[in-house]
Image (tube, rainbow, N blue to C red; front, side):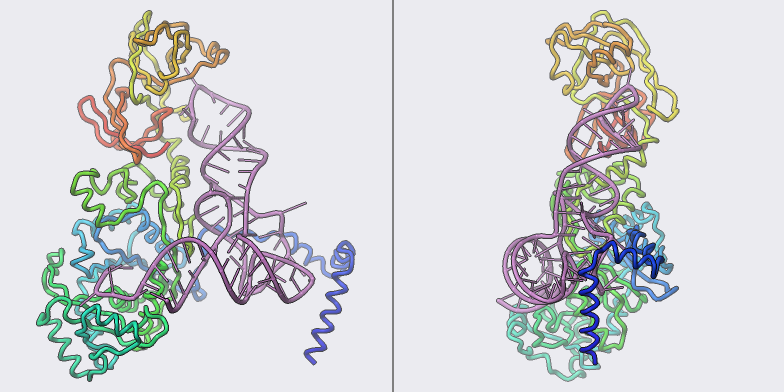
Length: 526
RNA sequence: GCUCCGAUAGUGUAGCACGGCCAAUCAUACAGGACUCUCACUCCUGUGACUCGGGUUCGAAUCCCGAUCGGAGCACCA
């Protein structure tokens, strides 16, 4: 019977394949014109984030769970933005959870807790709840006790290397089959501090002969006798949960519906599912994303960076050479630009190596109409204008927006950039932007004569139009990801503290600090 | 060694669950042009990709198998 249907269908298909498409088109028009319409309407590509697997009208609880052992990076921004964006889409709660359960190798930085919240706020995100794992250690102990009693966890006294041998050969370690009551006794001794670091571990029983070695009896708690940096916690505890355990318990306790995390934690999920099964919980829905690397910034680890900062190689966590949110902020990038950048990147499992170009472009569009224009001359070269008379130049503060003009007094000395001075020779013409035209008469030293004011001449002869700075000026230092530029700038820059301006033909900068005759600016982008 | 992922223009992304709307989307980059007293902004035009090999099918970016390449886990890190 079913065979007949297949044959019949095949016959029709062959017929269709043989026929002239135009004929079929006509037939379709006769039979079902509405389908033609459907054929012609293109599928609209969906904008923004892909939908999440959420029940109709259902809410969502999602989290961003950093270890505050350093400041938030651009990678962190992805977690903050995407998670909060989903919560905004579906409604629900966004939770920040500090996974600060390692006072030793990933020791939290006390200030970083605040930094994270501050950066989050800057991004326009209000967390509905903030949780610190280090406040909830006893909660984890409770579940540990339960699992021991159920026979799903045991205290293991093996040395690390020994346990690895057992694991690699799918052999239970000598401690694995002990009675729960006995395990419980050892567990209490553990948390009371009777054992030394590394001498005992609480393990979750999975399957010691699982084909994936990553899933065999994983560690849940270990002993660390370091003091926790948070004074509220201090040295209250000597037994600390590992991420797989802490995260598993918290994701359930906090009612997480969806988790987005790095794909390096895929196995972590498989391990955690044992705990969920034992406790009869339902695992949240998960999505993974790949690693994100920024072209412009090399690889860096938080601990290595911390060292470099302490040694003075970087000015701090907001050094413009670093991919931290604090650095991006200091450079004057707008939070909207960063958000859009992250949303456009989406959530994919491929590791991405992205360049900051898109972010810069996005930001440029946002700030271009607001940024006042000024002259800044890097690597300044003095030019004497032999017949230069006292003049006041009045360049507009913005080429299209009506922001008024600045005024610059000039006598017979100007400075142009080393780059612009490079190609000059006797007879070269130059337009000093918004001032007048000059002709070079000697290069060593640089001298020029005034040859007219009109733009007509400029349009005709097309000399380079360059920015310049008068004799009465300010020293300007620009800190950028590529290094440090020093030069001269016009006096009015001093009024723009904390603003993003454009140094014409140089790039956008945020004026960070103004002292007597000296300005420090952070380079935003070109 | 064992185990898991992934692969679309220079970069990032859409399309893949359900094969024909795909001579493949959008952004950025790059090139050319318009505008402009900035190399900014804006506008126009152009460049540029389905990793490879088999298979299934009338038809494959989409399904299947293999290879290659890349990433990750097997921690008393997160």
